[in-house]
Length: 299
Image (cartoon, rainbow, N blue to C red; front, side, top):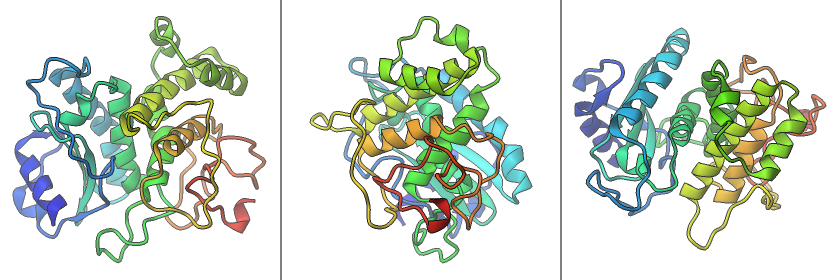
């Protein structure tokens, strides 16, 4: 498979945890990638129109996420490996499984996208981890794998913002971090109205900025995204593939506004567990209807 060959090539790149080449046999990919398949290429030698992220920052982000989530994955019976190929011009990232090895691949071209930020890269890695850990709803099939291990794209976005990025950043001094950074006024107002503690408000604003960064990466030149213009579409059934960029921004931000305990576990079979639902009296933080069709027990 195409994803398998890419994953195998990455064995020569940055390795967060050791993985033998032989264990890559029979690899099954979780989907088409963080972004839909694209022809974008951003070389490591590009000097204009690229982000400010350096190779060392890129590696530090991957190590940080890997160090945090490796023990969590271990308890679930998996071995986490995060691979970063800084030299690659590919603008994408992928989740892959090979037996008990849970893999995240991310390419330097994506980190160099001009709209990308350091927190944006971390949210991308969290999205890919979300395919492994995000729970239901699952993809109808994971590239031929009948076990349906991969959470669908919208759920990977939702879990990545609600659980992963929040858990990793919540111990930082986010008030100081956000002091010199601008935040969209609409997003800031929502964060301030949702959270009472200054640190929580600052964390919400920080996640909002990361979300906006990724929405701009995902959007096309004629596809403007904004906190002020949520996607009003309503799906008739849950959509497994990539929602539109605006819908994905809505998903990141609603997840950011979910005040459920970040340590509440999600479920591989029950999409209502561990998240914000109408049935549990939450008025926000709920999965957007532009990709998600809630079950009766969620209403």
